[in-house]
Structures are given as structure tokens and as C-alpha cells.
Length: 314
Image (tube, rainbow, N blue to C red):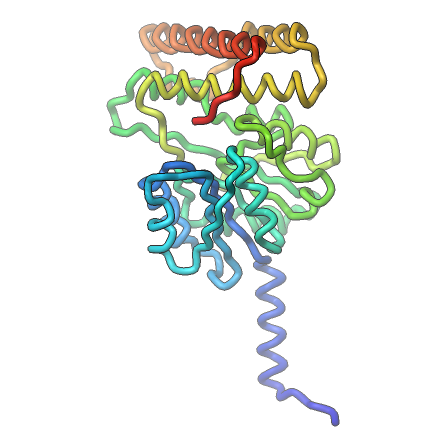
């Protein structure tokens, strides 16, 4: 028996097919570790996305939180909650990748607030440039109090989360990274053993496989800034741990070679990411002293790891 669909049904099917072509399925993956309050803001922002809700999946991967992140996730309808017992945000992101079959994977962090058109602009960019498989969106840092920028905040404005610089080095920070699934199929997923700089390691590996990131300035998220110097110290210790592991264990460098590589990077001058944030000699001096102190922290952490210490997480 032959079943003949009505004209209206055929038109409806054609329309649904057109919508799926224009709007592929997207999964947002958010690793979280003891950031319940910030996660609330992040999920609220994702709830305001103008991307078709039926084609949007949100997965939160808890990496050992003890502050009630599960309750935050449960308060948002349709958000999936997973648990990754292996320590590290990149292991958590890999679990999110495995838990979905969506065509496009969008990564952000629990302390980020995506703009309402974040996913729409990202998908438009990918569809208009089929040769691009990896998009790195911009990360805007906003002070806690407008007009009253502390030196800790000013240092981050000057040096942190410069997506332009990241892309020039062949990677994009996972605070705002959108990837076609094919790139993971070919290049592999994130290194699960890294506690930091896994986005750098994967980006360089993906670039070598032909998936170099493209900067998308109109694909934006806002990122919360650390408020205390000790938080910057801990972050730089974590970064040093990631860099040490990449050079020593993944790239098979000896410990002296690893320390030399890290030292050379620390003594290399860096341009300000946002020059407008350093608008007086007083600002320049304060930020420069802070940067020199943090470079010393990273070198000290590398030496500690060379003597057998273990890498830390935030």
C-alpha cells in the first residue's frame, strides 16, 4: 500500500528540513567546580539565547563540586547534569563531548555569561564559511564596579584571555570556543590529564590536522574577573603546571629542557591585550610589577614540579 502525504504535510516536512539546515543541532558544554553562583548566571544567559530551543542542548559536567551545583542545574528545565570523577576541566569537557551527538559543540565556562545572540552568530559564521571548523569568540572582561578598576582587575584586562593572541598561536580559549564535531573526530578530544592549558594543547594539535581556529569578534561572552591577588597566584601556578606537563610529558622534553623552555617564555616581553586599560604611568607600573611577580610564581611552580611536586587545580 502506498501512503501519499498531503501537500500541507509535505510543506511542513520541507520547512522542518530547511530549519535544520539553517540551524544545526548545537550542544553547549560547561564544566563546573564549586561555582554554583556563577553557574546560575551562566545558565540564565543560555536560557535567553535566541537560537531555536529545540535544536539546543545544554550539558553541565560537575567535576567534584560540593557547593550545590546540582541544585542550580535542576532549577533549569532541560539542562543535563553529568558527573566526571576524574579531576580536571578537560576530562569534564570530554565527557560532555561523549554525552551528545550534536553537530556543533560550544564550550564556555561556569563564570562566563554569553550574549543572547552568542550561538546564533557562531552558527551563522560557521555556515557562511564551511571551510572553518573551529571558531574562537571574544571574551570580554568586566570590572566588579564600573569606574573603579582595581590593580588586580587592571592586570587581567592587560594580560588575560586575549583571544586575538590565542588565535595567532593556533588555538582558542575554551571560555568561548565553538567546534564542528568533525574536528574532534580527526584531531581527537582534549588531553584528559591536563589541569590547565588543555585548550592550547588541543588547538595546536587541531591546527596541525588542518583545523586552525578563526577569530569571531561578534561571538561574545563576558567573563568574571578574579578579585584577589592570591587568586591570580593560584591561576598562574595552575598554568605553570599545564605548561610543564605539555613540555615534559607530552612533548618528551627532559626536565632541564622543560625548565629552559618555560624560562624563555617568561622572559619574553608581551604586549598589553587591552592597552586602554593601562592609561597612566601609575597603571603601567602597578600592572608591570604584578606581572613580574606572577612570572616569578610560574617559574617557582615549574621548579617545584621539576622536584617531584604535583600540579594543582583552581
